[in-house]
Length: 70
Image (cartoon, rainbow, N blue to C red; front, side, top):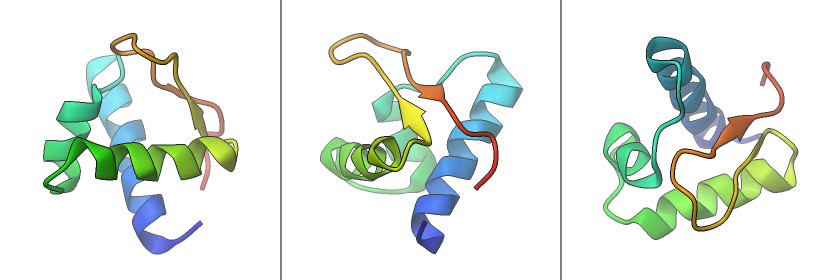
């Protein structure tokens, strides 16, 4: 996992600990400081492929962490 992927993963985990529910893609966009939701989606696709997260397409707040360490 790259440093930036690890940072995104940590933001997701921290958000879930603080709020007891996952962030939306738009919330992640703001939290990680990128200009496009497609950039968030790109990060999440890589994390999903590597087995760290999953989500249900077209459903809000379905992001789930599969591995708790990075």
